[in-house]
Length: 175
Image 1 (cartoon, rainbow, N blue to C red):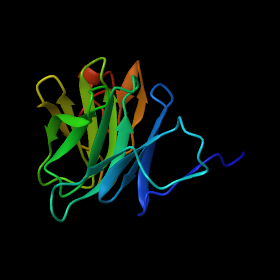
Image 2 (tube, rainbow, N blue to C red):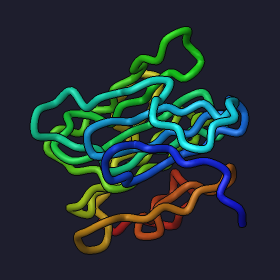
Image 3 (tube, helix red, strand yellow):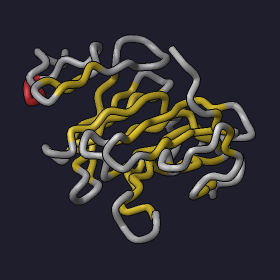
């Protein structure tokens, strides 16, 4: 594998996403998401196209997820009041949806935007599922144990392995 380009984010990068559709890379650091264009021919890039800073004092990002159609970027982390959904096709980048999760620390994200669903796994074992059309919580499920929740996602099956819910085609949830 050959190194093609170096993107100098300037802090630890905890997650990243690549859009071949828009030819952008999104690097998620603790204090910001930086948006890099892949259209230029530079070997080392120190100047992102956009910079999306964390606005909440004492909060930091932990994860980001590019939607399958490259039209939205979800971002979550610690001490944030919500998971942010950024609109990537608008003339200027902006948050189009805020999915509430005050008091929870987001570790991982998944989405099926065709079905208008977003999923987040939190450090306390909770899995929260939102309807992105109105930002309402569809379901909040306690996972097995505490800690990071990992997701398995495909267009026909989207569910964290520890979540078993009949409405999601994932088995049953204990009462």
